[in-house]
Length: 417
Ligand code: GLY
Image 1 (tube, rainbow, N blue to C red):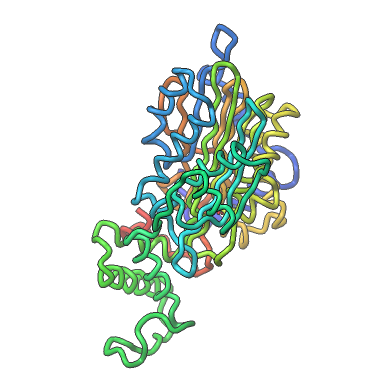
Image 2 (image 1 turned 135 degrees about the vertical axis):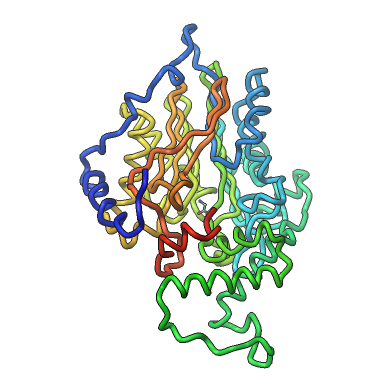
């Protein structure tokens, strides 16, 4: 599908009017309960894993563990622990992008369907595998949620090592972000620096302003020692701070289900900010009598619609996975009365798994740019990546609001590739 930013607002409004007003958008949900989603002939559900795209590399091994009788939550942890341990995945765990003070703060929550237990941790520093810490909360305490220093001390008490989570790469991206915003603070080169120059007049055409901004940032990324292959990705993270996260929901052939979500949260957030990921009912919700759901994207918006819980309850009342997820997305759109000038700064992807193995991935927008759709990962015997079904046609524009990048610049530059 081709779609330009110029006309996406117009078309998206049409989509939103159809969606927000309450009448269901034409969805593929029911039709899509295709052969791959059906229970097996024995009546037992097919073991199934669904997760965010960054879990892909870890799903095959986790699926083998599940098939061999492994617990559903432990299976989910095997998936999300991969990105948590990977220093080059800057969305979670080690190497996650830090808060505005350059400190990595992690959030996670989980639900174990077979024992109907839940655990969560928020604002955790210096402990890499917060997914496992969230499980430890219900294993070792009578509580559900621990935050901040208390959560860290608990993690150390039950055996998790303290370590510095800020990798050199993430530190440099944070520094680039600090310096980019430095005309409003004391970071970046001061007037005594030979390279300092007064802010440029803003009289150039928008495309030129963007070109200058991107080139300036890329040069600064090079000066900071960010490796050439990663400089444009670093620029992207500075211009559009991501809310990288991973969610995973799991079903076994006994019908047991669990869900888990882990994140370093919104990049460059205020210290102490927690989003949806550690909030049971928002970032993750599982009731194995019905299904399991989780989220990645704009945490603040998802908290306001209790997204994961809403989806599971929708399925309890008969909606198919895709319809259930679309309804939660429509609630987000409705919170802004379908105003596309605001919704374009919001994005959300839901991962939905029903107790019989039917599943869906749905997103508010198609993706961040043409050719880069939101995807999710499924394994129900075959590992694959699928494109999430969007509620709105077009692409989100991440916060903070700059004028949109002109289409021709996006097409002609390596930006957003
Ligand atoms: N969804 C992750 C966050 O907003 O923190």
